[in-house]
Amino acid sequence: MSVQSVPGFDLQPSAQQVPVASNYITNFDFLNQYLPDTYEKEFERYGNRTISSFLRMVGAEMPSNSDLIKWAEQGRLHTKYTDCTTAAVINADEATFTVNDAGVPAFGASNSIAIRKGQTVMISDNAGGGSVKGIVTDVDLANFTFDVAFYPADGLPVAGAGKKFTTFIYGSEFKKGTEGMDGSLEADDLIFENSPIIIKDKYAVSGSDMAQIGWVEVTTENGANGYLWYLKSEHETRLRFDDYLETAMIEAVPAEANGGAINPALNPDYGNKGSEGIFYVVGNRGNVWAGGNPTTLGQWDSIISRLDKQGAIEENVVFVDRDFSFAIDDMLSEQSSNAAGGVSYGLFDNEREMALNLGFTGFRRGYDFYKSDWKYLNDPTMRGGLSSVAGSGKINGLLVPAGSTSVYDQILGKNAKRPFLHVRYRASETEDRRYKTWITGSAGGARTSSLDAMEVHFLSERAVCTLGANNFFLFQA
Image (cartoon, rainbow, N blue to C red; front, side, top):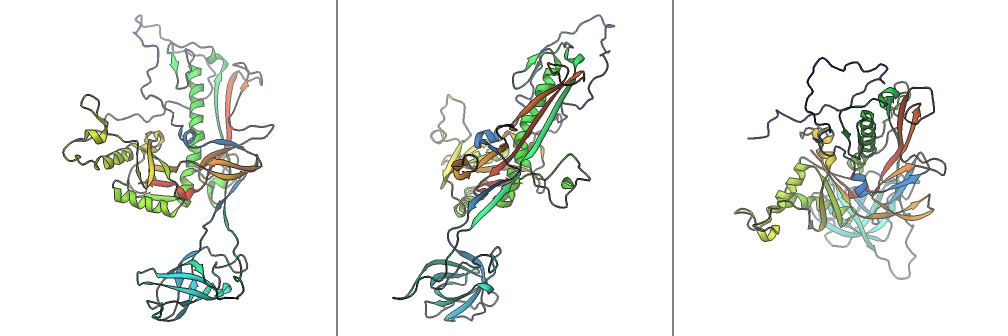
């Protein structure tokens, strides 16, 4: 048995795009002498329909003065190369290794390979053929090579032909009365950037319709009520705009050079350069779990192992859809010694007289993981309606590190604590574009033009900064 597809849930939008009314309403029907027994107030059958709250929970908002936001993130402290090759034979006393790792700066642009004479290294065969320790005797920066003399008498444990080796530095060794280290290393930061986008919306109603009474008492999530129907449409426009302020920061992607969005011939007024949203950044610079939800401790151990290799933030919040939430609950419930024969009251902190609690708010396994349902991933009109098959773009959850990091704030002129996830909006002493709204026309108190209507405009210019994306985890189908 399963949930039947019919009757289902309504996905038709309640809002419609219509021109401003230019004629009077004419469909009053007085031919029927009987009046229906009516419920005047709308029934809120979908509850709270807004989906924004995620960024308010995990981030902050702060002003920015520029079209471009840049920040620096620390690189690794120690040196390690995972794609080194050599032609040396087995048991060789010394060998010349070539570094083939991607991202090594060209000679002259920086220090090329960050290995110097006199340093001690450990070299390991990536295929598991053995490992050996040695000392660097020479370095050729122009050709990305270094020579190693091995400490053990049997030298290199495997023949180098066709092999790849991992090398990391663990110290150095010099003789008495010798010169100091040859050369020095310069700290290398990773520079990231993002651009704000301008988000707009508008609601318009004619002055005549503003004076038209209705028999349905309207209500919205932010408390608007009354018998004037335009109040409902105006407040729903505002609520919809509030949601887009958050979802745009989550879903935004940068416009590629050959894409249509950046082509002014196709889009003279719309689109520009895009922005880097949270999902885009984590999918490209963070960690991704693909192929369903992790449902066993072994799978979570692999996630924890990856976090160990990243920033190792101890406290993390996992924002999940409903299926992922249940999967975590089921996984944790199976850890009960009585799970097969029934519920363990002691473990679940339940009593016979109380409602059975089958959910968990989090768990600790090396790190603290707090679980929180994310309405955006469940809403059928947003990501909740996507297919769970591979390639559908469905997101099951997002792991966000809790806490903050220290960055230099150009507005404050000093280092400041910032959440890993925060929004920057455009603002100066004379213009604040965090959340602008204004009224034009000649109705509703506006006196700006001869248009017999009220137009409510909404605007914001903002970008999201995802600091330390390597600490985030994206869970997708």
